Image 1: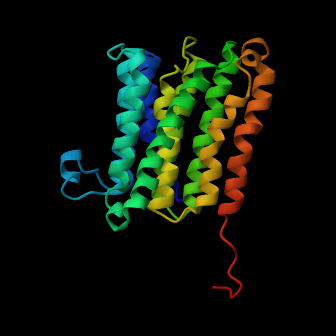
Image 2: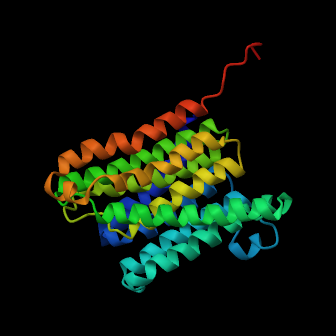
Length: 283
């Protein structure tokens, strides 16, 4: 990938996170990620149409970007205590359903009612479940600070591998946008070097899990990512629920040693399945 393209995708979220999180703390992380993703979209392609413009001329990738921004806005509102924590699951479910429906609205016009129910309805449930699962995983993270940061790094690796999977699915642009989300999270964790109090909060799982599921489903429906690799990657975060919570609290290093291969193995398998087969004719 061209270095200039890589910088246009990664630099905006990194700069936004380093500025906002360094100045105002980790509560600014969701907002910084949203700003960085928006700017990265504009620098990589063109400035995205606003939602009221997309009603007239829908674009799935642009709606996807706004869906991730909406999930970050939800997390930011809860970070500022503008939204009670008990309402987060319901709000996340609504954001997941609306985001996926808008992302797929254009391609869904060619589907039967059964396909719409399966891919939009079932997909919305999957996105919401992923959001709430990652939220729970972060809430159950090991208490020791070093291992807590390692949990965040594990999620950075997951999003980075998602980006690689999307590139293999013949959508470099989707991969770059997903990589921008990973870069934002990675930069935020990096601020722990000088902000000792930095830590992910459970509500950050809403936008992290939402990005993971929405980008992979978009790779299937808007690009050429096959279902088998996508399905393996989509299932990965749910495997973290198999690791006992007490293990993370009492033996955080053991928790990580079990959790890392558990979540990364299916994604590496997905990458292997997504590698295009060589053309036997040489062209």
